[in-house]
Length: 99
Image (cartoon, rainbow, N blue to C red; front, side):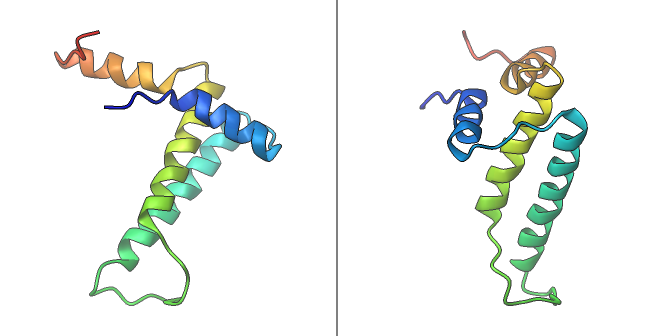
């Protein structure tokens, strides 16, 4: 399994795009909007749902990427490493990665 440093990748992406890092409040709002876009993309894939804008380009994969990026930005704005937070939570449940 390839080990990705998600916070570093997000940092490099922001630098590449010349984007300003949002503060925690802004990042949380971005995260919330991206979760909404993920929900919209997922619902659009369900055959029994009627969409108001069926021709809109939606991608569950793209939106998962956006959610992960904004969750990373939000957590870092709070001074929390998102991967370490996940591992800490898993450890509380008895799981260890063996590292």
